[in-house]
Amino acid sequence: MRSCEYSKTTSPTESKRTKIVSIGDVRFFRHSQLIQHKDDTLQDVDIVSITFRSQKNGEKNQTISMHKSNDPDLCPVKIWASIIKRIRSYKSASDSSPVNCCISNQGTITQITSNQI
Image 1 (cartoon, rainbow, N blue to C red):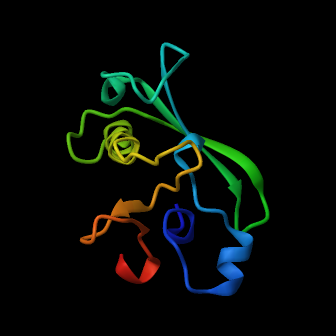
Image 2: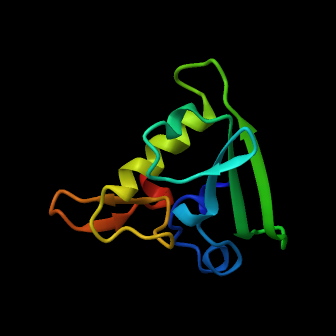
């Protein structure tokens, strides 16, 4: 993934061409069946699929799927499940919430920028 797909950028051209992935763009599957974000076993599903709505290369609505792995630290399913569960825990979270949102020290929802990564 390009950093502009999961973080806010200060570059005007990047922010115009690429749309940050929202949590509604992240879907989980177990045995080919869609699993809801609220499912308690989200981290144990087989596949995570991410749809990129608009990319720097001009492609739109491209979906990439990744299978779970046995690596406890680098499993894409576990990583994305953790991100989704964290964001879904925020009161104002919705499917349109970007994957780079977090709670600031002041208690407000903010977006992580590419400069902070």
